[in-house]
Length: 349
Image 1 (cartoon, rainbow, N blue to C red):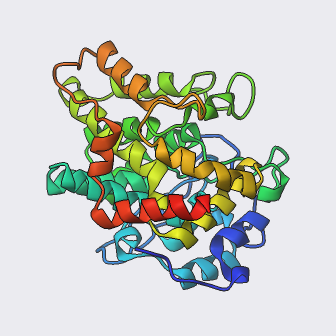
Image 2: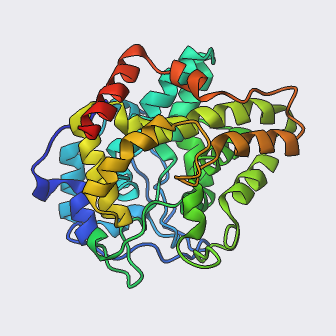
């Protein structure tokens, strides 16, 4: 599932980054705000109408784009599996980064779907995990810097999980309607997304990890995950911890399973977002990919320790599995594993 190529000047992510495609800044957090409930949107392949998604400010998210942005989003379009849940402009506004662009959640959805099916999940669970993946990096503020500007070249913020979770809180009714989730499934979706946060983000956006989000400020990634897991029904926690390992692995690997050219574009996009020179990042990427699913001091990432700790803290040792890196790799398709190896070799040369 790929979004078709467009001239750079009409790529929705680029328009929304520069502000050219936006009618106003977004990202001001006031979850008590209310959009006009009489406004409705239609979704491709779906009957009826749906409540629009809201910005963190409480306004209709689509009010943050103008005709140029709307036209570019509609021209780019979305795969049918995405368009049934989001309007094009909503999806591009929520995923308007260089690395965290609209293609990334689509890649992650396909990857976690493959892994879930191969590991024996039910078709219903495969669909659910793919839905969660489409939402996992939703962040309307991704290209805002501290002064409200839109350029990723001016120190903008990469997508952050606390912002995604706050966005979900603001849009609970609309999201459960669009995805067909129960209240319990909504809680599971939040816990799954919380588990994807890389611990390097514990130092962002600065000391104390303050976003202006009361429910999440001052809490590191593990704390947010554990608090989210406590909201999940106790009988569902063991399965959720297993699913979280799949989604986290898919999130880190998906953009490198598409071939060498997309992987190089991924490195370039990540470089723009985190401010590391692309050449240095490319040199370090094969080492990162070799360590997928493993604890790594070099990358300050310890998924094995984190999930084993969660299983202990929630008394899930006897009811849940902690997957090895080899098991997680084995849940990928043969083509995906071949692509991953080709990417590692290509970036190393």
